[in-house]
Image (spheres, rainbow, N blue to C red):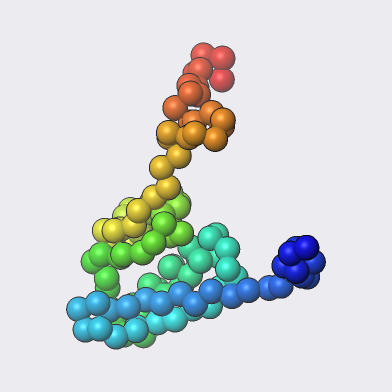
Length: 111
């Protein structure tokens, strides 16, 4: 029997770094719970804190797919004027039996 199946749950943290790639320095660090929603929230915290402390205004933000949530991308572009270089999950071509979002069309008349 796999011993991991019997292990109790544990609380995990993720380290999130804001790195100034032009100068190769870590400008800010924020710990979060190791779930995507919490990691996305660190983006705002680190950008605002770095702006307030060091007057650094990033033009481009590169990150992994965990930061590619629509709400986060909208905030970066529309509220902060930062160009995101963040891949997003493309689930439009699912092969697991789940209907992709392209199979659903909103009927405005029927609401």
